[in-house]
Image 1 (cartoon, helix red, strand yellow):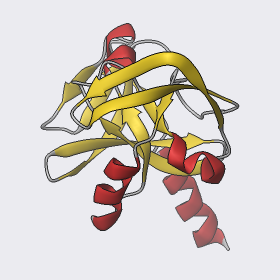
Image 2 (cartoon, rainbow, N blue to C red):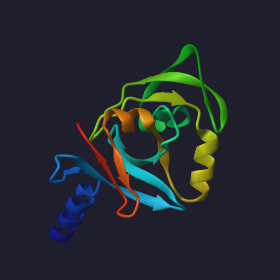
Image 3 (cartoon, helix red, strand yellow):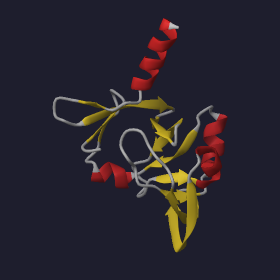
Length: 151
């Protein structure tokens, strides 16, 4: 039981932001085929976000809303243009996060989910430039660390 408790503790701190000497928060990144991911916990379930510096908004995949227990509703005429084409955009609500709070919009990212599932990676969405800019984020690709200011 003692070893289980230690392992559980170490696992829980692996996703917890820490502060560096400059007061910035640090989050470890995971790398897979030159793509970077951040671990998050949303509504009590551990998963990942793909970091996409070219995406203007952070998005949750509405196709996994039931699994991660968040709600969404269509934003009347808003659409998002990205590499995957034109997507309808949804307001996302009823979610709680551990660590920094991220404001999400929603979109059907099932095509992206399909690709990552083939690679054995479970993601719930995309961390976009809106979060990265507001929190003055810096990414150290050699150390695989995301630095950000604020909560």
